[in-house]
Length: 98
Image (cartoon, rainbow, N blue to C red):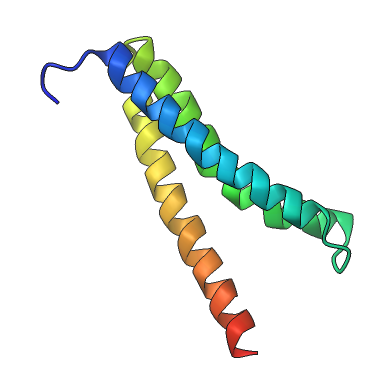
């Protein structure tokens, strides 16, 4: 929105990140209780889902502080989210076809 303040835009990004983080925390709780994989493998499965959220959080915080560098963090978060979702879809497809 052209007339939207940086504070409000950053707050919207942070609110969306918080909502997505709730889903990620639930997914991490499920993965953490998976006894079929080792401890290191569990972290390897949890980490990709957290990376876009960290990028969105940093970007939203910077934008809310009127720092234009936050837009780069948000763009990186978008790219990371696409890569992670394609990776997840590929793994899910392999598991379904098994």
